[in-house]
Image 1 (cartoon, helix red, strand yellow):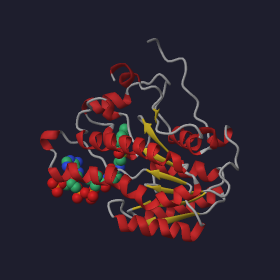
Image 2 (tube, helix red, strand yellow):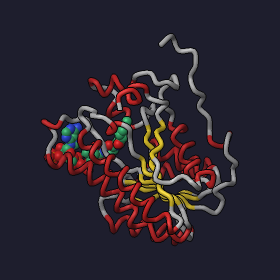
Image 3 (cartoon, helix red, strand yellow):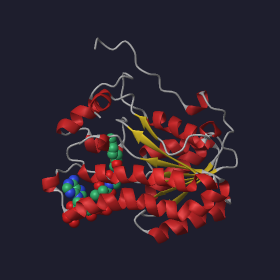
Length: 273
Ligand code: HXC
């Protein structure tokens, strides 16, 4: 391909969607203290929703909640919880409903990752990522489903594209995210009759994120994620946030059980999957 003549623009969701579309709505977001999930929370709040963000590090969560509240004029609360602990999630859901009265949108975003080859990955290392990503997603769904049914709301699961093919050093995350995709599909089918939608966002290489800092520097994984995309640039957290606004909105009322890649058309994956 010839030299880059074009790079896709990066826009805030408010440049495209109306500001008040989520007035009166409430978001429950695991992993919302940083990175992609924090930016998704910011965007959904900018359109009117209040939010609860969950994570393990209370200091970071509290600072993020204050920043998000100040930035959006809505209320964000910080709840310390490890998604591997069902009771902590049940308590968090109850606290959110006590504070805001409802839960409309759930983002299952908490994740763990590191680079390790199968030959060097311990059983506990594999299990730990499955417990955070996959079982954490299940625990989050179980803790919130009755509330989301009541509001006829929507789930967004944050997955990845790396498990669409064999990505070295990522067996734990690949297995975990494949299970997340499958879980979302079942949730969409079972809960559709209750008015609940469930979709997956699969971010590609997103600049400045924890995932990129962990994955972007080693061998073929690094080469792949830094490869140029058809969109002409690396992803921005706002690219993922915009997709989340769409999937939560009524414009996506007929969209469920889908996996939406937000990866700039990542060329390598597209040509080899
Ligand atoms: C090999 C490792 C390892 C490494 C941990 N382990 N890091 N093995 N290489 N670099 C092993 C440990 O040795 C241990 O096994 C087991 O994993 C559990 O480790 P702990 O440190 O006790 O677990 P914990 O404190 O719960 O930490 C969880 C974690 C950690 C996943 C290991 O990295 C974490 O908390 N990450 C959270 C933030 C994060 O990763 N965000 C990135 C998400 S990005 P043994 O056998 O020794 O007991 C993402 C997107 C992917 O998911 C797609 C991007 C394009």
